[in-house]
Length: 312
Image (tube, rainbow, N blue to C red):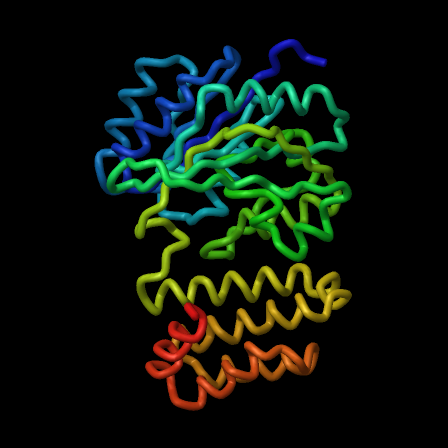
């Protein structure tokens, strides 16, 4: 067991230089002495380069790396992995923050366990980015051993957002990199595959403060956002489809999500095709039955009725 193994912290950022600076400060303020900090800039067009190089000049632990073109979430994770020198690696989105003890307690947890444990997660608090107010909710991961069945059925409640996770770098390099063809959701797709071969543990304390706002990559504000989600969800389901077939209700639910996203992105015919696939798997999926009916009235009506239906 290493006394103080190096940890690589990768702060991924794009066009949010002021938020990035706060995120980096939360890494610099960790109660852990052996850190390297990578600021990974996905070709920002604002003042990110200026701010990041300024931080780099102040702190020898910081390296600034900039993509030559905007390459997306998966490429950001992979560039961080390819440039990491630590025994462990952790990622931080530029709008989230780490609590000072995060790195220390997660390293201690992994150091106590064998190499079969490739991941540690923790609790997450939430704050409103616009007001700065702390929200009255805390996420607590539902980690089980073995974890694969749980994460197969619900990766988010099992693991949490990427800003709370720490990975054993040797496990990552042995397993492989993140997918770069997914516009969103590549981290949870990766976790599903990673935890088929590696174990996960958790620390029972709040490690990360997660920002809630309307400008996250996971927000929906346009047809383009729904299309990105549709492409990503198709890839996710395809990557675990053979395993999903063992759980008919979940397999049906996932096919229904694809149908729903297709309708929301404007293609109700494609949506109904997936809804009918979902019913073939699970004929008593009542939400899918309702969605088929809604979709017959067109995209605008589908969106309107769906919003009322799911909010009640």
